[in-house]
Structure formats: structure tokens, C-alpha cells
View 1: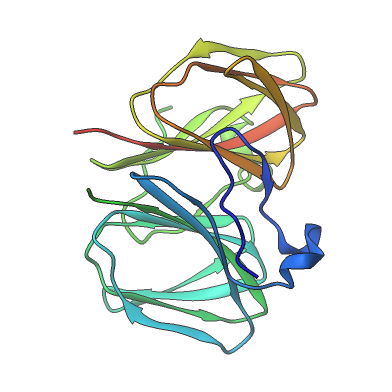
View 2: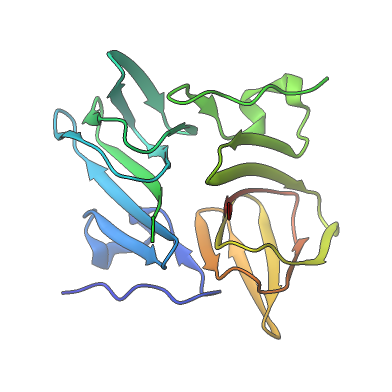
Length: 109
Length: 109
């Protein structure tokens, strides 16, 4: 089932545990002309392969922990920690524990 | 003391409880040419008066709860909930409980 994007000013829950219907799946929460927000579910050992996007991003660990690889470095993000990354930088993510991650991406027009 | 902004790829803690030196104060976490991220502390009953910014924003309640007013509507955001708002829309925030809020703002060049 497609998940409708929330509209401007409409609250949504960030945590999958609060919305059983989403079944802990990766989901796009918002998308405007300027900004995209998604919640990634990364089970332990699962990776999102190396990729890059044009705009700046932030990656916020909501649950569990992940390894974030960029610029030849691995960083561990625990729940409650975040980082930003400049656009165009190749990066990859791996779940160290079952993890849930909130990602903001600035979109270039 | 000025809080140095984190650099690209450097993890920071989102929650003030994890960093006693910040003493639960409002702080800018990141600022790039495209994106600004700040953590607002809104004690119960305290408001951020009506204002607007040019770019799209997201507001994520990390702790406590807030009332978010825009477009003639009040929304309650509990910890774990977020919303986005299009740029240029006047809005205000009030702490319903002692609250901590993460704000992303897309910056226009």
C-alpha cells in the first residue's frame, strides 16, 4: 500500500513502533520541492550500499545503532545522535543493531 | 561559551540530556549553505513568537510536547512526532510540557 505523504502542518509519528500499519518499513514521510524526509529501517547487518545525492543531508539515528561510512571513515551513530553530510559525498549505512534512521535531504531544483 | 558547529560527517547528540554542558539551552547544531539544524528548548508555557522563514522547515518533538500554531490551526506535537511547513508560512510554538524540539530549515541562497 502506498503511504500518502503528509501535508504541510500535519503531524506524523517518526517512530515505526507508534504506527503498526507501517510494519517497520522504510517510508517517505514528506517531500516538497526543497526537502525530502524519509525513515529508513536497517535491520542488524543490512546495508544501504554506497550512493550519493546532490543536496546536503542529515542522518539521525532514532533507534538501535548504525555504522555510517563516508570519506574513508566509519562513524557509529547511536539512537539520539545525528550528523550532516555535504551534498555529492558518497556514503553507505549498515545496521549494527536493528535500527531506524531519519534522513533529511535538501533537493536541488 | 559559543558552541562550535559540527563538521560534515561528525556525529553529535540530539538530546540535551546527553550533554550536560549545554544545560538544556537552544543551540544551532549544523549550518551549511543549504541547511540549518537547531535544537530548541521550550520550557512549559514558554513560546517562540510568530515568525516565518523563507525555506521549508521540519519540526520534530524530541521530548515533552508542544503546541504548533500555523494557518489558523493549533497542532499538538508529542515526543516522536514531526511535521513540515512550507517556507514563508507564519508559525509559533509553545511548550505544553518542558519540551525539546529539533528544527531543520532549508536555506535559500
